[in-house]
Length: 203
Length: 203
Image (cartoon, rainbow over all chains, first blue to last red; front, side, top):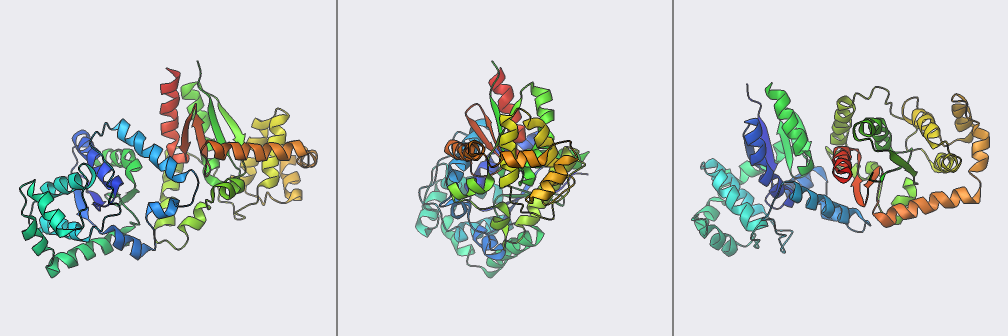
């Protein structure tokens, strides 16, 4: 029996990107496959009354500096070599997250996720503007105009909202959040525990 | 060459207690000795404009529940069997932290730390009241009245303040904080990284 592993993500979260870089290693070592579940982080924050990490550390001495130290450690440890800060942060991700839902419905989420994470956190662009999205996705041979059209579908909008609400119902309050069976893990720094839980649950 | 390892703690922090339970295992495995550095957490919060974790999660859905899940996991993983929530939380720790400084100056910090952590988080008491402190420490054969007398010394007061300010200067913003050489680690969940850093630095 294989355990169900989920990665609840929003492209706007740098920690989701960094997790995305490490997930393939964990999949290789454990044989598990992470199901990518698009959720709208802004919606999660609204539903839980949580605030973005940036707001939480604003005005607190040493705290954001420490977060940067931990990010640097994570990048070094996992030999992540393409990460670049997106100068447009925070990017409104509503369109690209609806795009993820549409791509998921149409069976090509993997390809879309790889492309958009690259345009957000490797070759960063202002991915909340339709024309930027279209020209970025064109690089990957994706018809961005057709995809943006799809993001207007009520079924797509509803699915993103439903994913987000269901995630909060299960216990999410930020990004990235992982579920291994019924167990919740929050943050990129829990990936070691996620891997241990997969191993434990797969025994 | 052995690396300098420091544990900046306040008895009022349950996560400092939980770390204290695990430190002996790490010392055994690495051969390192953790220097216990008393700092006043209330002072750290004041100097950094940080707030207690409880205040940060107040009103945020799922966040305190998740913190509890992680605490339970930590307790299970490390087979900690004496932890008990202190119903008097938050306890004003000024007296017992000054007591730690006095005990440190007089060369018996280890014994004092073991006793006070027990009275805070194993057989919890309201350890901000002088009579409670005196009767609790009497169980350990410690003259609490003499110690409380010592906490009035200017040198003791000054040392706790100096420890606290120096800790914040180095990068602290909460409890527990660890230093391995120049590297800072925040929180009980970083103890695995602390151990790895000790091993790395001792090579």
